[in-house]
Image 1 (cartoon, one colour):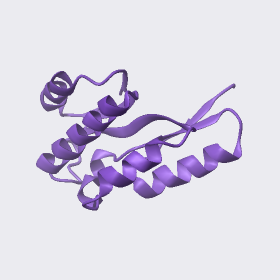
Image 2 (tube, helix red, strand yellow):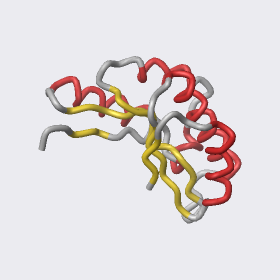
Image 3 (cartoon, helix red, strand yellow):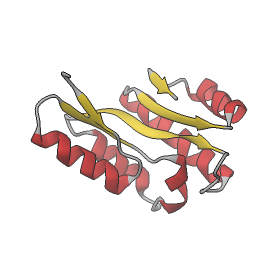
Length: 122
């Protein structure tokens, strides 16, 4: 193994991922808000996220996306948080890590509208 990416799923876990990455060569991080955690985002989450994304060890925005299977967060909020993160990734020219579960149509429409630079989709 040469590289590891610690994935953030909310602001707190993104900070933890960055902290881990800073301790080791070959370890990197992502920072983002998973659809399950969209309901818990503070008003200033994009400001906080943008600051996290400036860290040299952060290589992508995410994990973000839509999850209509569990719906831990309301779908309209999931879509808004997902789109805003894609727009931020586009602004910063960063790749994205996208989660999708039972939300193909909405997810593809948002991706088409925003066109992120690069993506890993699962």
